Image 1 (spheres, rainbow, N blue to C red):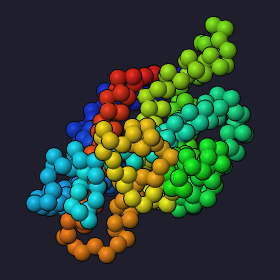
Image 2 (spheres, rainbow, N blue to C red):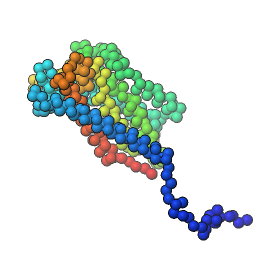
Image 3 (tube, rainbow, N blue to C red):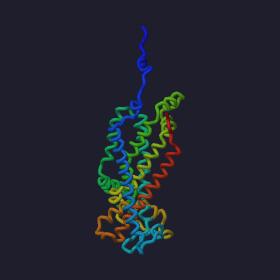
Image 4 (cartoon, helix red, strand yellow):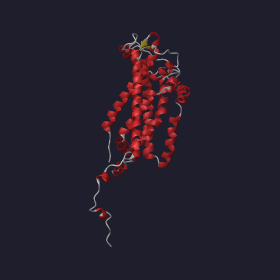
Length: 327
C-alpha cells in the first residue's frame, strides 16, 4: 500500500508574504526586555559604586596632608599623625589571603576531584550539600573560632612566645576553611562538565582512574578551575569579620632596613590589620563626615577594587589562553 506524502497538498499552492512575515511574540519580547534590564542594573550598580569610591577618594588625595607618593611608598599608616602609607594594610591583606589560598586551594581541589571522579551519585548528593553548609555559617562565628580555637592551637604547637594572640596566620587558616566550599563546588562543576568520552578514551588506553583524573580531566577543566580559584581569592581578599576579630586591630607599621624581614615584616604570627578590617574599625568610630579619616576609607576601598579588578583581568586572559572547547 502506497504511503501518502503529507506535503502533497502544498504542491502548487501560493503562500502570501503576510503569512511568511515574522509574527510578534509578546512573551519572548517581555522576557528579553526583563533580562536586558537586569543586566543594565548590574552594570549601572558597578558604575555607581566606582563613582562613589572615586569621588570620595579624590577628596582624600586632594588634601594637602596626603600625596600619591606617600600613599604608595610609605610603610606607616597612622592617621592620627597624618601618615597615610598603604603598605602595612596591603601586606596584612596579602598575607591573610596567601595563607587562606594555601589552605583552601589544595583541599578544595582534592575534594572536587573526589566528588567528581570517585564518589558515587548517592555519596555526591549527600556530601556536597553538607560541605556547602560551611558557606552558610556567619563569618563572625568563624572569627571567634579563629580567636578561641585556632590561635590557642598555634600557640600550643609553636610556643606562646612565638605566636601572638592576634595574628594573621590563624585568621588566614580560618578564611581558607571558610572558602573551601566555594573552591570545591565550582571546581567540581568544572570537572563534571568534562565530556565522558575523554575519560573513556583514557581508560581504553590503559590509564588508571588517578591518571585519568590528574592528567586528562584536570587539564581539560583548567579554565573553570582557574575561574573558581580567582573567585575564591577575591572572596578571601574581601573577607572582613574574620580578620577584624582574629588578625589584629592595628596596622603593622615597619621600616625597611631597620625591622627584620622575616622576624617582623613577613612574620605571619604577629598582629596585623587588613584593609577590610581597618575599614570596619574606623567606620565604627566617631568620624565626622568629609574628614580626612572618613575619606581615607574610600581610598582604601578603591585600592581593594583595583586589586580585585587586576586579578580578574589576569584570570580572564589566563582562561582565554587555556580554554578548552568540546563539541
